[in-house]
Image 1 (cartoon, protein in one colour):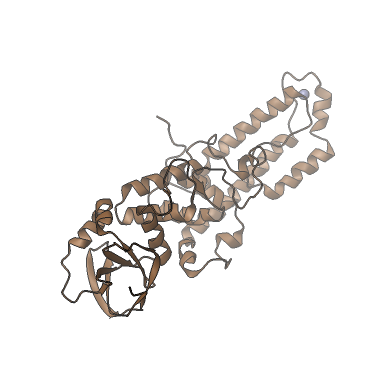
Image 2 (tube, rainbow, N blue to C red):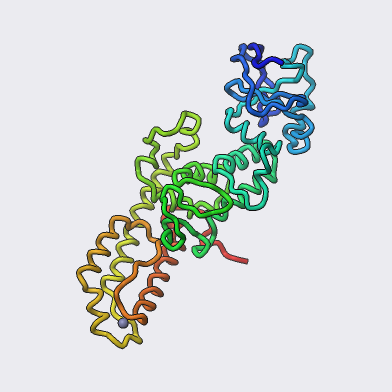
Length: 345
Ligand SMILES: [Zn+2]
């Protein structure tokens, strides 16, 4: 069996238009990781990597593939190892992930409790939508909703209450059992949510993106290859929303800190003088001034203050109100037209 395949007339299938186009001879093909010996069709990615799989599985999963295979092929259509060759515009990584999920290779990725890497979830939404494989799209969305939920109580990550959750690495801020997602993946997630009408997830995604370093947000970091760079590039309009939002969060952050610094003891306090002094305490002022550096994190859990239990409870309640207000304001903060907060049924 041939390990590689000589260049031939290029035929690119564009699933959006369902037709093939002939072009200049393409680059030689090489075998991808997924190569089923009894497969009967070879899907070739943009860079010439071929995956040998079963036509019947593709047809059963996707009406787009079904329609594509129904188009009669000319006599001189491209062949490799006796199989029909279909060239697709997808990258090697994307096509490989899609086929590995569809052909269930190396254990079921979609089994209950299986934590999938974000890049696979991304493929499941993007290519699941493009090739009409609804269960892949739905599965990925369900997982991502866990990270970007409609309520503040369900929004769990390092920036909110990392300490109490035992989260130690801010680069991987989500404790989710459904998806392994790095903080900087939120940028690609933002693009996906905008492109695929996942409006309900936008406010918490914008919030997470706004907590990243500016260099990362504008894409000046060079850790990614060119394939990834594109999916991580935000539009100018989106960048403006993020940086304006940043400014508004900062203002909310100052208001939250003021609340603590100027707080009077709670109504049922029995040690009024002590508690009143505590908020004027220089250590506490330093603590709060220090927190001004991370002030845009307006949804974080409250800092402990050295007051009586009744006052602590009173402060907590006030802080909780402020956080909830900041959460409900997210759509306004980032100038989004999304319905927010989402009305529960
Ligand atoms: Zn008190």
